[in-house]
Length: 232
Ligand code: C5P
Image 1 (cartoon, helix red, strand yellow):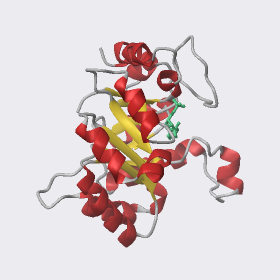
Image 2: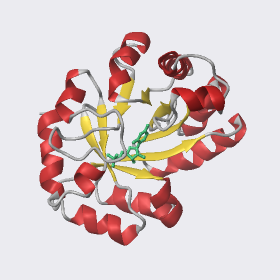
Image 3: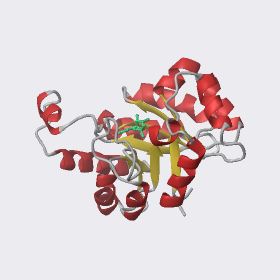
Image 4: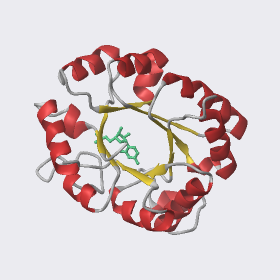
């Protein structure tokens, strides 16, 4: 899989997401399904979107004891998704167990990506809530290295961190970057943003784009604009 734009389908239910995807007619964007939609509709929505011909990033961010994560990943491996994820904070052992669980009997598996530190966590909450007294950039890079050590395929990170992650973990270690906005667009609640063209420039492998596409007056045109800036 090469560079691609992943559309964050943060909708509350099946009707909303399918109405949205219908707008694309022949086009089949790569879709991110997160907790909201998954908890509302269950695995059936994943299968339905897959059957419509979309690639899927199932963003459930697992974090539990290794045995539980391994068994849960085994279940997720049957859904036919292309990418799924977990929290690197669950430890190297948890990530290794996740990979084992995700690998199907025939040896194939979806790509497995780690969340390092959520972008909603800042230096202050890192120190005061989590009692991690290290600079955020170092923590992110350490967690990315742990993910690489465990054999994962990449990390979700800020576009601003993608270059450093590639330098630390290798060019083929994937960076999936949210926080993307058009130069003339609304930033909303995202703090550190980049345009699709800038994300391409710094070497992101995938961009995750939600509201700039889902809330656009013409979502298909907004999607095409992302593809034109990031992929083409
Ligand atoms: O609407 P917007 O483009 O901000 O959506 C970004 C998507 O990426 C959302 O689904 C959000 O949950 C997700 N995300 C993020 N920052 C992270 C990890 C995931 O914005 N660090």
